[in-house]
Image (tube, rainbow, N blue to C red; front, side):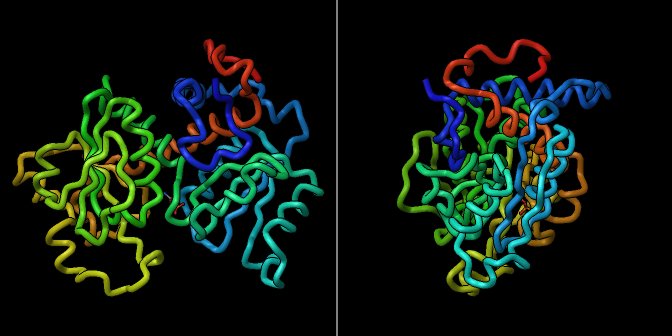
Length: 325
Ligand code: CP
């Protein structure tokens, strides 16, 4: 039986008991917050644990603020680390930075970096618990989990047999990589859709198929998950003609209506309006992006709780109704 890991780097670090625990706990937390009954005592209110939000050299709105909000709601003590004004700029290493944070009492670190597998060197000798908040092109496991939670509550009673078409820059998207590992575990089919230069070639995952034709994918799928073109991770900025991309892979409300498919539109954000999605589609009631953001706070509360409290012994026992930790 796997336990919740010390370093949560990839979806593969957790198994079905942990994923199901997170889904159930997220639902409980959402219901508590919606009913204005945040009177529960959290782990953080009874300990001196400190969480650091460390976002290295990469911009973020959703993930950074979502974790910050989750920590506020949990009553946690936290510090924000600004890499741009830190001693990293004087040549200090990441390891030394982590040891410095540890010496200040940090117990959990939420970590984003532009390097793929930037957490890997710490996997077996972490100075504290680490949560991957997106590492280059590798993974964004907390995003995939909040997406899964949103799918369970927003669209599907049963996930089994449903098809999710992830459209766009699948190759450079860490979200796409995490979803491709997560959703098939629930019997869902993942269709990666995009031009050849945006489709991964090396990895063949069970339950994941490739499609070059956007309209074929739209006709087949139960929901569309739209990715931004991630030029910051491209080796060349002229990989493709943007106008032809919109024409072939962008999604507009008019086009969906023409195909007779008014299906949910997911986006991890930020979205390039006018590129992968048009203003009419993002303003329509098909767009789920803002509900994903809201659920992200609850899922991240559950993940932080799990990192603090779940271990090999109790992972199967929880949850059982509303509880205090
Ligand atoms: N979804 C996501 O990771 O967004 P940010 O880059 O704004 O954090």
